[in-house]
Image (cartoon, rainbow, N blue to C red; front, side, top):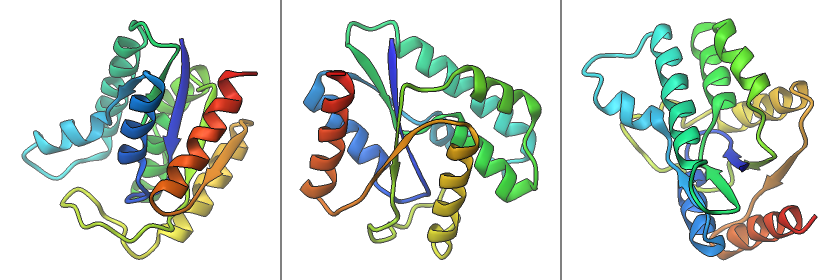
Length: 171
């Protein structure tokens, strides 16, 4: 099963775009496990929680990969957890980094922070999305993976992402 990941800083439209693209292409959409985990946590998260979040994300991806679609669309993946851990805690658990290297997606779409910030109780970084975006670019490059930058408002953003996926699936 091929995997396409929408990634990037908070409030860059990943979930909305992933749902739209999954509907358009008839693909499976893999929701972000971190949101589910954190909403049920009942306390402030700690670094060890990130390993549990990574395990939950992997389980979701593996479950949805068993479906009948040509590919799965993830609105997050392990690179987000790795970056999150480094930014918040200064390092990342080796297990997360190892899993990230072993579970590379077939295509990354990196969403630019050109959308207005949308407040959410789980979001933490309204003022440094451009800095985080640069970190995403650096981390994806360090993984040795190609990624496509997605920007634009509304239909423009969707059209760009859909065109890139079309190119990818028709290779």
